[in-house]
Amino acid sequence: MVDSLPPEPVLHWFRRVRRPLPWRASGVTGWHILISEIMLQQTPVARVEGPWSEWVSRWPVPSAMAAAPAGEVLRAWGKLGYPRRALRLHECAKVLAAEHDDVVPDDVATLLGLPGIGDYTARAVACFAHGQAVPVVDTNVRRVIARAVHGREPGNPSKADLADAEALLPRLHDGSPAPEAPEFSAALMELGALVCTARNPRCAECPISRSCRWLGRGRPAYDGPARRTQKYEGTDRQARGKLLDVLRAAPGPVERARLDLAWTRDLAQRDRALDSLLTDGLVELTDEGLFCLAGEG
Image 1 (cartoon, one colour):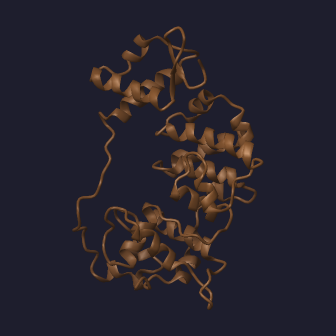
Image 2: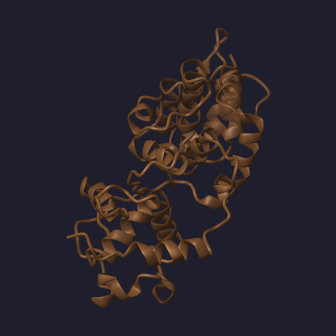
Image 3: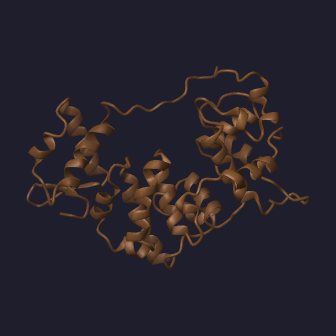
């Protein structure tokens, strides 16, 4: 039974210590929250706050971004990593402008039909932008539930994670979600980010330490299957980033020789990285045989 995580202490704690993140401010639109969720994928909050503020000022509504060339959006993405996110967000902006009157939909099913919007992002936007009582599961939420409810360190993601989160949502006597259910989803995420951290969790500050099964069992170490990990140094992803750095810094299309100098440790890897950038639509080849960011040829 998923019944060992009382919502009231978590909500009281959240209301007292929640971070004043800019996308939590009053007046923030669903479009602004969508931008934040895309940027926050695999990127720390500290690296997102500045670019997010610049983007919502530059492109306050989807149609503003839709009117910009894809290369301009890619250039503005800078060092946030995984630049395909920027390209997909640009595509999403076009659909929102053309088919949704510049308004981000409020239901998960419609959100999932937008370019670049996966299950997590759809649920996060529905919940945090529109107050929908849907479970939202990220790494932080998975860790809190694994420890507090199941008494263990989290393993690899599974379908059970979403069911666990949904079972924990506060409910009324008739079984329907309580009005504070969306706030509880945000509170769980905050608890994992600030207190129930992967390393050095601050259990003494945890509002549910008395009912936490992991703490009650003496904080046992992880003993499950090997976790999936991602490295960066020396990968194709790093090579792609180096090539994109050249194109973002250039005032116009560049010759292949400029790109060749950006990654010399493995020539086959460099060629593979460039081919993948072309395939993904992040880079284009001009009629003159030069390379440029998408839409800048």
